[in-house]
Amino acid sequence: MTRIANIVSTGCYVPENEVPNSVLNERFTELGKPDIVGKFQERTGINTRWYAPDDWATSDLALPACQQALARAGKKPEDIDLIILGTDSPDYMTPATSVVLQKKLGAVNAGTFDIACACSTFPTGLATGSSLIAANENINTVLVVSVYMMRKLADPTDPMVFFYGDGSGAAILESGTETGYVGTSMLADGNYYKAWGIFSGGTAEPASVESVEAGRTTVKLVDDYPAEINLDGWPKLIRNLAEADGFSMDDVDQVIFTQVNGATISAVMEDVGIPVEKAHQVMDKWGYTGSACIPMCFDDAIQQGKVKKGDLVLFVGSGVGYNQAATAFRISHDLKK
Image (cartoon, rainbow, N blue to C red):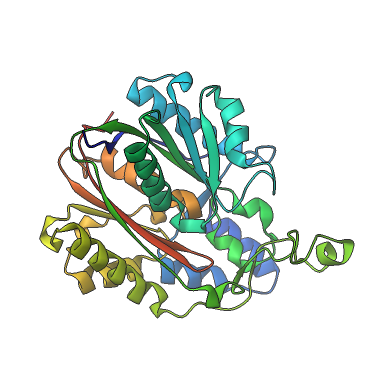
């Protein structure tokens, strides 16, 4: 019998500490950059962001979304067979953040691993978990969580902190025979690997007093990405999915994109011929939450009644690297709780 992964519940966590654009504008006005926040806001549609307590690590931030997803599924941590955690702001370089989360969650029967392809981690994690469920009779319940706390790895005087909000989102996958996981498409372009990242602290350049003082252990935008990288890449991913998995654009009920630029989302939806109303957005109220933004947006769309049982949902993400991924699911359960 064919084993198909189904999304049976979701969870989302938005921290309590709001940092609106007005606060950042005051900071950068004092630093002699009075126009930067307004320019970013106009370009992206981001109005605010939310921070977790300063003594939290990424695993702490992931925990509430996982607990909510488990509660909505009527499951206990011991029921999880596998945890897949996506982030590019881990607790440590090693060990994996997923194993720290396993300890904090009490998922004593779960294996774990991390996925580190930035903002494409959630569609990648869904595809990976679905494939493992399909191929292994002993893997039946998979927790996929994506989480972001990049602002703790940033220089607070760097204008790019505008884009770094904290948050986490999770989904529980279960094996079934109903239609669930549909397919995945992936792209990458390593020509841009030096454009944005933390370039000291790994084996290419181990951290040193010099690299810390020079700011190379904090996240930096070194070179702008071309505007067409998502304008071209996202439509290609969506069309690849549709062709490979036999659906049309008219069949798509919701597209959940990386939440960083509203204008890009609108342009891509027009390109592929799907009404922009079918692309739920949360960046105006939660800001850009990187690896976590797709599952957070998905959960919000569910709670607002925009995703229902039977819907075809596409998850389309991209992030530094440059990595891009899209995954399609037919929703087989009533997820609103």
